[in-house]
Amino acid sequence: MIHVQNFSNIKYSKLIILGSGPSGYTASIYAARANLQPTLITGLNPGGQLMNTTKIENWPGAPNQLTGPILMKRMYNHAKKFKVNIIHDHIIQVNLQNKPFNLQSQDTKYICDALIITTGSSPKFLGLPNEKNYQGKGISTCAVCDGFFYKNKEIAIVGGGNTALEEALYLSKIAKKVHIIHRRNTFKAEKILIKKIMHKTKYHNIILHLNYTIQEIQHNTKEVTGLYIQNNHTKTYEYLNTPGLFVAIGYNPNTSLFLNQLDLHKNYILCKKKSNNFTETSISGVFAAGDVIDNHYRQAITAAGTGCMAALDAEKYLNNKYIE
Image (cartoon, rainbow, N blue to C red; front, side):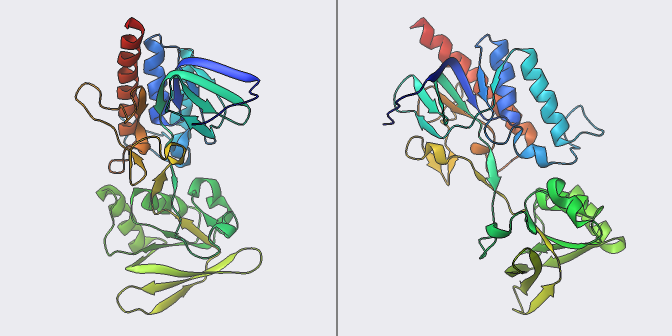
């Protein structure tokens, strides 16, 4: 049990939504329209991972010129239209064992009767020595953020899913050459992305290194200088003279706050998935949506869909609670 002392700032909300990606904003819009007067706490990265997406071509009703930041700004404005109380804060501790639920930031205690968790996910790293020490010094997880620094240079990206190929296509417009390093001989990405990549390997500046893994990151005292990669079959090495490596190998759900409080599986929050209460977690009154419950689809549209479901489930829970 968490004991809270000396909080000069205490805020109560009937419903708190924790996180500000597609699922969080969608949940807040539905909850506000149901007159639940929700509070949304953004976390450290307002807008979530979608803020790093340069081009969105599969959001229904938006066939042209949509980016992640534009979509998230629209969602933010939509939530504000319905007077969602959006607070820019970061929760560092929660107590879900007693009701009402308690959430704590550095200097504020938040209390609520129902909670929707939409804390999203964070990029995985390779686990190589000094990898995180050189983040921002040649190693990046965001092509949109850092691609400009490698204009007309050779760079590498590791990964084989949608994110890796999307970022490779983006970087190919900036860099002299883009080396894609993937541990398998096939990609897991959508076919349309694979087709675009294969086209660029024939006529442009993308070079594939399939069945390769990165063995060592070369660096000086200030920045990355190159990579040693190894062929998984022949065990031979190849050196890439590149000052930049973009890591796009997947994500970990941001659920460390809820360890030993909620039921998790491989760090993803488990929901009961009952026909009439799909998003409720192992604790009654606590709901979850988006990437914290989904390690399979991982799409903005599916995250938004579960955000809608969580808001409807929370509305039903609160209605029953106040009737009792």
